[in-house]
Image (cartoon, rainbow, N blue to C red; front, side):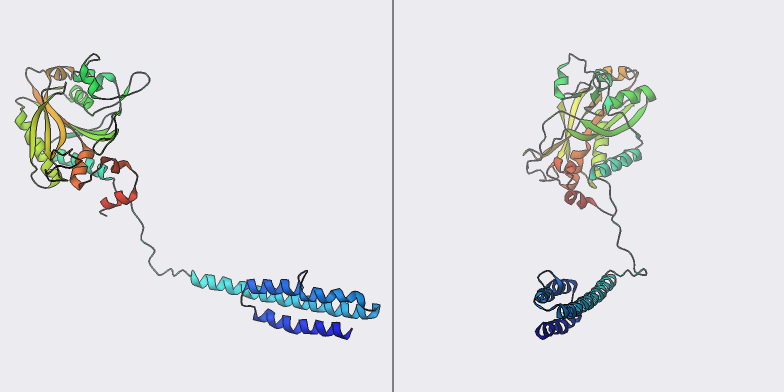
Length: 345
């Protein structure tokens, strides 16, 4: 009996001191298991009660129950104190000072192609052009036939088209706005149309299946190729902030006669040759020319009285040259690391 009580007294003295010395909840939990758990020190001592007489067993059992209750209460108090200390430490760590300024807010910015599109619109407005918009889902008539490209014409092979059920197309160019503008406004006329266009073609460093174009159209009396070259050179100077070397060369487009293409010196390699300009030193900027009489007729314009010029160019490619971007696919890659380079705000 005396040995059992001595063990209980020893456990009490050691355990109560350890409870107060527990530095954190994990240490306290380990102490509780080591003392009061199924294999704890107090539980092991109590297994010796079976060897005592009934009177001694009763006295020792009462003493052990008092100690168990006393230890549990001490553990609970210590646990509550440690939990409160953790809460206070967390509050102190995350304390908010309402007098301090908040974190800066991140603002978005226009996509570089959208920014270029807006800049071009302002540039042409400054030259007296009216900016127009049009449908991306176009009819076969406006996308091809009214532009002197009937169904049997081999020029249709030049544009790989996304055809839709019911005969519509995703517009392959913004040129359909030429006809709409002439029909709505008549002559004289000075308009540009900007927007997204679609081609079912392979992608590479300078070609995408979805890209952006600007279409320009001027119709008036006495319009010539000289006017066309002057407007395009003014546009290039406005975009790049300095005169740009350019050239006109003959080409073929069904909706202009004569047909021309305007190239300008590659801004990436400075005319030395690179993958973007396919080693030529020149970048094809746009197809252009004098509006074909059949197109003027489709727009309701008297081709005996009026002449006009038209041009269409890729805004994406122009943006590439502005910022020396080597691959057009980067613009639509969704890579924010690339797009953040154009954040000026």
